[in-house]
Image (cartoon, rainbow over all chains, first blue to last red; front, side, top):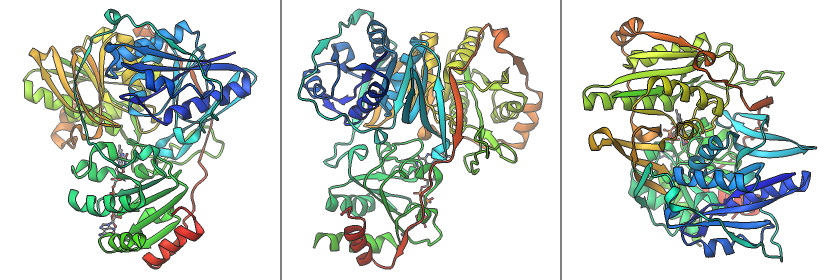
Length: 323
Length: 251
Ligand SMILES: Cc1cc2nc3c(=O)[nH]c(=O)nc-3n(C[C@H](O)[C@H](O)[C@H](O)COP(=O)(O)OP(=O)(O)OC[C@H]3O[C@@H](n4cnc5c(N)ncnc54)[C@H](O)[C@@H]3O)c2cc1C
C-alpha cells in the first residue's frame, strides 16, 4: 500500500501552487494502486499555509512548525523530512521541482537510503510496481524508469500533474514535534536578496514574456519585456545570456538549469532558441517568437514567428494591444 | 587545505543527442565528450581559491570506465594536482555515485568538496546533496559566490534560488555545488596539457573502497519526446495579434 509524503512549499506562509501538482502525483498513484498521502509543511508560523492544504484529499496535513525551521536550510529540513517519512512509514516522498526541493529532497533521500528521480512527468502502476517517465539531456530524451527499494523520492515537474479536485471534507492538521536542539547547525542563514515584483511568478503564470540577448540593458528589458508583460498581466523571464551579463536576476532564467515553465503563451523576444533554453519552455501551449534572424532556431518550435527587430515590433505590439 | 572536485564525463553541451533505434540508450558513436560544464566551474573555483590562499592540494575524481581518464587529464591540465579514477563498468545513479564519493572522502579527508550542481546528461541535481548527507556535513547548493572565512573554518556563500540570491555561512568541511555564475572556467593551455601527462592518476574500484555501488534506478527504455513543429511566419504585428486572439485564443 502506498503511503506518500508530499513536501509542500511556501514562501513565508504563501503556498506555492506547485505543491498541489505534487499532491496531484500522489493522488494519481493512490487512485491507481491504493494508499493515501499526507502533506508535510516545514517552517515557522504555518497556520495559514496548513489551512490552504486541507481541501486536497490528504489524509493529514503535517505541520513541522518551529523557529528553527524559519529559513529553509537543507540540513535541518532534510532531517525533519526523513524523520517524518520514517515515522509515517512513507513509501514515497514527493515534491515539485524547485530550488527548495532540489536542495532538500536529495539530502533526505540519502538519509533514508532511498533512490531518487528528478523531473518526473508521468507515473503508471502495474500492481505494486511503479513505472516513471522522466526528462533528461535538456529535454531531448524521455526515460522510462523503475526505482528499487522500500522508499522512493520523487521530484515532479509541476506542469505534468493536475492538482487534485477540491474536497468538501477538510484534512486534519497535525503538529509534527520538532526538537530544535537536535536540528543540525552546519548552515547559518544570513540574508536573501529578493526583487519584489508585482508581476506573477513565471512558474505560476498563464503568459510569460521572455527576453534574450537582443535586449541591450536593464532599462530596455524593463521597457520592452516588462512593458509587454504588464500590458498582458504576464510574468517575465529571460535567457541565461541576460542573467550572465547582469541585466536580469537569476530568478528569471528559464531553461535546462533555470526554471522550467509551461504556460499557455510564451513570448520569446530576441532569444535564439539554444537547446538549453528550449528545455525550459518547449512544453508551452503556444510559443510566439520575435527575432530579426529568419534562421534563428527558435522559429523551428514557435507556433507564430515574426521576423522583426524587437525594438520596433514590441512597442508596436504594446501599443496595439492596449487599444 | 585539500579540495576534492568530482568530474563527470558527459556529451559536449553543443552535440546533438540521438537515441538508439532500439531505445536502449543514447548514441555514443561519434559523440564528442567533455567535462560536465558545471564541474569545470567547480574546478575553476578550486583553482582560484588555491591562487588566493596560497597552498591547497586539488584532487579530481571520477567514476566510470577507462575513457573517463580523458576528462581527468583535462582537469589536471586545468591545474588540478592529481586524479583518481574509480573504475566501474555499470552506470551508477546519484545515490550510488554519492556512496562512492563518500568513500573517497573518507580516504582523502578533504577540507571540502566542490562539484557541479547537475550533470547535463541525467539532469538529476542530486549527487552533491546526497554526498553531504552521507558524510554528515553541511551543504551549499547552487553557489554563485564562495568565500572562505574564519581561518578556513567556514565559508560564506551566495546561492541562486528561485526567489533570488540567498547568503549563508557554512561550517567546513562541507559540500558545495556550483551554479553558472560562480566563474568562467579557464581554457586548458598547451603547457598545462604537457604538465598533466606527468601528474599522478590513481585507479581505484568501489570494491577496494569497500562500497557496494548498486544503482536503484533501472532504465527500461529511452525515447525522444514528441517534437514541436514549426508553425507559421506572420508578416506583421497586426497579424500576430489577430492570430493569437482568434486562432490560438490565448490573448
Ligand atoms: C551548461 C549550460 C547550461 C545552460 N543553461 C541555460 C539555461 O538554463 N537557460 C538559457 O536560456 N540558456 C542556458 N544556457 C545557454 C545557452 O546555451 C545559450 O547561450 C543562451 O540561451 C543564449 O541566450 P540568447 O538566446 O538570449 O542569446 P543569443 O544566442 O545570443 O541570441 C540572441 C538572439 O537575439 C536575436 N536578436 C539580436 N538583436 C535583435 C533585435 N534587435 N531584434 C530581434 N532579435 C534580435 C539574434 O538574432 C539571436 O537569435 C546554458 C548553456 C550551458 C553550456
